[in-house]
Length: 338
Image (cartoon, rainbow, N blue to C red; front, side, top):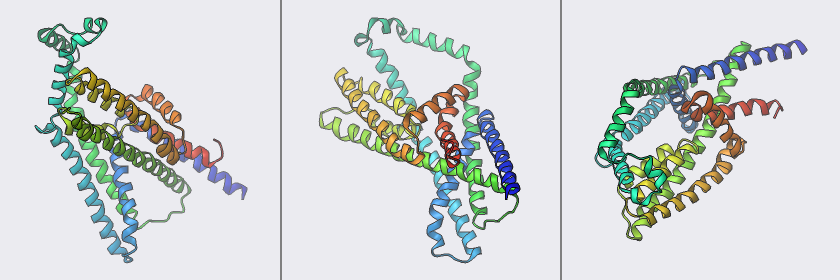
């Protein structure tokens, strides 16, 4: 038995190295959107497919059913992405209108701000235009690359979803292999997919709760007090989308809502801030209860992983950190190392 165990250990270590290199290359080559989109489609198909297996026993029928399900998932996810883009570009949910309105609010709130902060702000529209012009001249290359990056991300997302659907379809008829390295690699991929499912689905649940509470505040609480904030629908949708990013997304939505609340009065802005602080504390608790329980990690562990990954890989590191850390901890804990 000793030679077999030694060989197995050698193949497992090789699979660890290959998986680690692949995960780093995903961030270095900036193909994280493709990986996440593919894993999302794959996990959604596998979440729904067991229900069909109860009614379908024929192998050919099962392949057709899984193929149709995978195509449906890809269509629905693509429709959701395009729907969000159309919404933010429409008059009802104009993101550019929201940003312009925020700029007006900040510019009109000078009298309520401390002197040290006012001194750092442009004196007026012309000064602001000159400042923005200088910024665009300095960062012209970055600005020009925004459209290219957006197109690249969209293409990667679509390709990733197609690949995820193809893998899910291939696994409708799993092929057993006696090749040890292949088995070890499949095990690593399975554990990475499990980490993705636990983290992402838990964060989606947290984002839905935060969005529901924010929606109640914007649509019911404030109107009952005689306050009608602009861009309510945009703020609600934005809260859900950015809420898919742990911690960072919640802070972004909080800042936007507080600034928009400032258009009504300072009291409303302070009230919004207090309400959102309560939600932020609730999110921390939910992270500990939902994400922490599913990933078997404390909130501070995930936050520390996000800080380290952000320093190494930027925004992509923040997004990937909870998934990568959960996968790593699963590998170590299964061997009794942590």
